Image 1 (cartoon, rainbow, N blue to C red):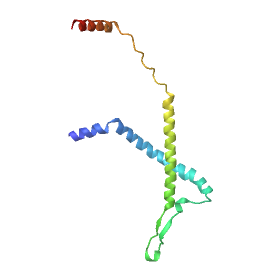
Image 2: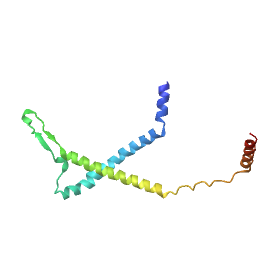
Image 3: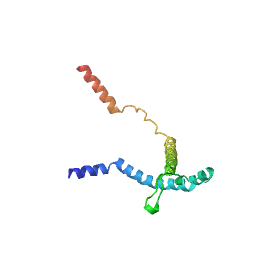
Image 4: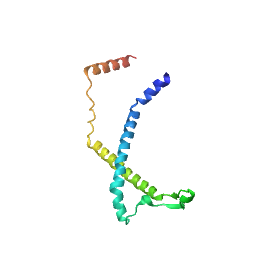
Amino acid sequence: MAIIKEFKEFAMRGNVVDLAVGVIIGAAFGKIVTSLVADVIMPPIGYITGGVDFSEKKIVLKEADPAHKIVENAIHYGNFINAIIQFLIVAFCIFMVVKAINSLKKAEEPAPAPVDPTPTKEEVLLTEIRDLLAKKA
């Protein structure tokens, strides 16, 4: 039963809940970025490169032979290039989101530092009593 209690305390910590929310939002954000890359970014890149579709790029190690039931063995480096482009776009988007959040935090003015208040009557009396006792000792 102690392990269940420990697990419950662990699962209910703020960091774990924040992490779960981050993962869920990250998954949804990933879909948006995937669409951005596939539908918005890659078509102009394909146009600039003369209609090259990176996902079709590969180095064939062994040709397919349907007669002998041999499938093609190839290194699909184009998919790797697409993954790198997607990563760079995701990293840039996350950078921009974090930068925007940080700028919002900077816009908030910090609360003024509390001014050292003058001592209350009780504090003055206690200080005097302490000083008198220190003289007697």
